[in-house]
Amino acid sequence: MKAKLLKSLTNRGLINRNMGKLQKKITVKSSTDNLAKVREFTRSNAAKSGFDDDTIGKIILAVDEACTNIVKHAYKYYPNGEITINIDSDKSKFKITITDSGSKFNPNEIEEPNLSEYHRKRKVGGLGMFLMKKLMDEVKYHTLSKDRNQVVLVKYIK
Image (cartoon, rainbow, N blue to C red; front, side, top):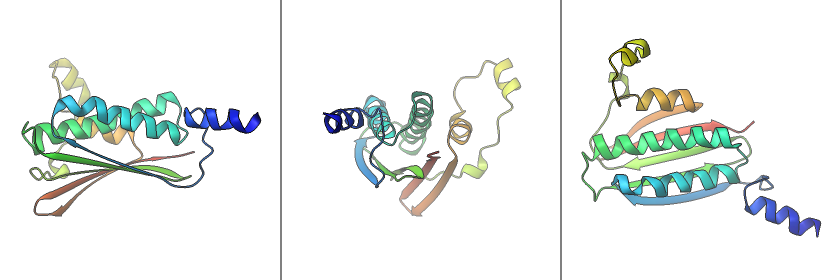
């Protein structure tokens, strides 16, 4: 009876009994219509890694921002590009690697926003990198080759 209850709670993401590695992958087309699928994939795997609801929400928002930026800027709304999301989790960290073949991006060209000015001007959008950096413990961007980009988001498991 006890083993059955533990298995049920673990499968629903209410407790984390898997101290080994979690490795999952999903590939979606570069359409905003697929963001709900990406959010659910992220939510499910973050829950399996033992995060609370508040932290899961932060991880989902960071992944959503990264994928939205890829759709808008890397693929310029071209709906047939591919976005691949790999999740690797162990007992110390939850790592999301997002790869695309869209236009290049230099994160060093993005200045830290002045939030007072941003709010005063009632701007919309443009906070994706800022949010990712605030919500996650690590954010790294790599150009893998002339036609491959990668964003790595890490949240430490405490």
